[in-house]
Length: 156
Image 1 (tube, rainbow, N blue to C red):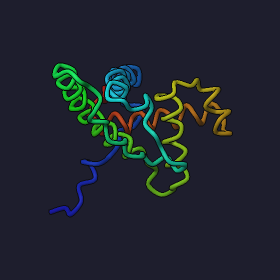
Image 2 (image 1 turned 180 degrees about the vertical axis):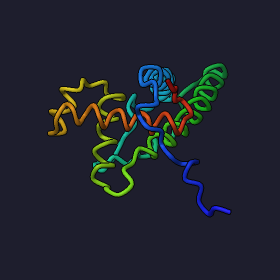
Image 3 (image 1 turned 60 degrees about the vertical axis):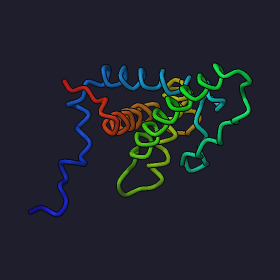
């Protein structure tokens, strides 16, 4: 009996992943998640620390609505937000480098800049003082890790 099954936790080789379809799937997820944040009074982008750890969202103000219908809508929106936010946390937390925390931080920053803030490869490279090639490589690794955690990967 194996104590740790590596195959259960391996991130697939980028060459075996259909990156365009995977990006599409992540885009659909983010298109649901980011507006769900604003519907419950959160900022569109999740807040992160300087080391790119997620900051938990503040509690939603319970005194937002006066009518019962508004309360029901807020409750439904809150349930959807909590569900999607839990998935986002799951995906964002697996963006890692196994041995180098500084690369983990860089990879998370690149994911955040590219896919949450929507910056181009060039702008992301400038903001992080790295080459555009490195941004592309790290963005691909980050999106594969994120998509793998949420079972959004598509293979060739």
